[in-house]
Image (cartoon, rainbow, N blue to C red; front, side, top):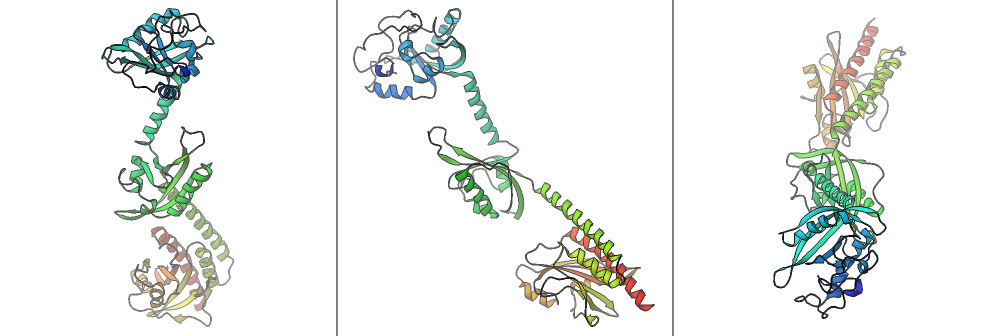
Length: 472
């Protein structure tokens, strides 16, 4: 543990004579070393060792077998205020770095490490040069000479609050990367995962080690562009001020899953450099799909209820019951479907009575010139709805051409999803109501069927009234 005298430390483990622990500010000069090689048996290079000791983040001091300070680095000077010139050569800490009442106990506990195996950890209250006290945590271990005999003790110490802060930071990082209730992914500058905790591994559908180093595009089918754009922004500009909600589609063994992740991002920079060097991004996220779907469903239900209320008020002002029916459908279409068709029963067949335009969006209007027969083939969804007296949902298959699928069923060419709801009033089937969606929209689901049946019931009442009025 030799060090250059130019840095304020000695080249020998101890001075030639005990300084006796002189008064503060005075340092006994231990005299020049016996030779330039430092400790016997050590290779030359004490200047390099002194530079390494002074560059350490931990405060470090060393004692020879007699308890005399032989080494004192710059961090020790920063913590206690005593320079290496003032510290090296003193015997123990008595009277300058520790109160005389505590000096014997401190010396005994430190020097006991010389004969004990491994390292010993202690906490002491030391004195700063300005008279203040500071609680430090020490790690001390014995030093052996070339002959294998105890030659002294080295002691690394730091302020307790700094050590506790470090331990808290380490404990926090370990907890986040093990069993946190949020997903935590550390991403390098190439946007590849380097650390994945258990929550994130489950969310991404893989093992913690299997996900490392893989491009995000292999894990996320849709939404990876938005995720990578967010990571690039954090690397370039820093963390955003608020969490972001990202919708992604994952590729899993069970198929594709659409999920919503509420995500926060932190830019990681090295604390060991003067200029911040980006190490990557810390990505924290939580799966909020269930909550978001519930919110969307509540918003959808609130909107549809409002539309039905407005439709009922508008229909009540219509003198013509069929005009009331088409007004109801105009309100029902908003946000629900792209097209609607009204086919009424006429004997053994269905006739087209009202519809929205096939080639462009527009209101539902009565067929000009009167109703025309609907040329539906056997097994058509509208005919099945009438036969079953219920609702039928259908969509174009993955391999089907949407245009040919729709044209075969006499629907607009852009139709890819259909829902047929029967029109029933006073125990009679009056016809069928067909809602159609384009391929860029999702298929009809069970809640959509319930809404369509509610609309069909109101339209059926208006159609029934129109037929009764026409007969009278």
